Length: 254
Ligand SMILES: Nc1ncnc2c1ncn2[C@@H]1O[C@H](COP(=O)(O)OP(=O)(O)O)[C@@H](O)[C@H]1O
Ligand SMILES: [Mg+2]
Image (cartoon, rainbow, N blue to C red):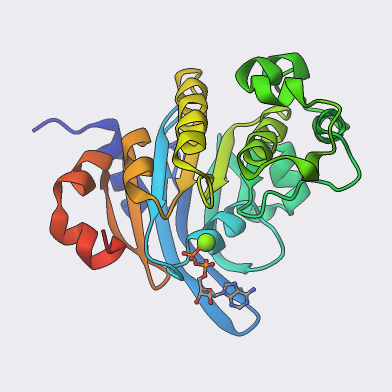
């Protein structure tokens, strides 16, 4: 049997402690909301250009894990290491993680009220390093171009999701974190966003996608990590999850 890159990444994460190989690596991370111990020693790798589906039931700790990676204040990281492209995210504040290429697209999308679509995108580029031009974002999401003068918060849910993703791409992203990008959206809009995520993937964007719609996420993803009660219970290929009904029933209820 020959070892794949993924095997090597996992092996080095568990045996060497410090991960030097994978592009992104969370190693034994623990995080708390106040006294509540939520992220309980989570480890996984994401290789450059890969899409990882981070799955698990409601309350499993998916959002908390993404927030920990983005280094927002809460939950607080108390132990463990997080590396992205040789940079120690675990030593950073959220603004430093953002400057080093982490872009979190949160579940609630956080479109800034009082600003147009274009102003929301411009605001993302107020400080370097810049990513895509606004023109290029409009090419990916023509609806945003058509609505560039419209106030961002008046967009439909699907368009707001496009704006939230566009805003992330406006910065120099190395790791895109998508928290339930399909939530509350009509199937036709989900398909539209899926199509753009395929395009973004083709450009080599390294992505972690959290989705209740696990099948949709697994179709897009190369690999999957399943969380349960703040711990990793599965780490493997997306296909393995699609093929394993027992695993899906136990941890994903699908
Ligand atoms: N701000 C918070 N304060 C305290 N506990 C929280 C907070 N946010 C989430 N939790 C708890 O953390 C656990 C994991 O939540 P979360 O990461 O949002 O799960 P998921 O995204 O997988 O549904 C849940 O038990 C939830 O109640
Ligand atoms: Mg969540």
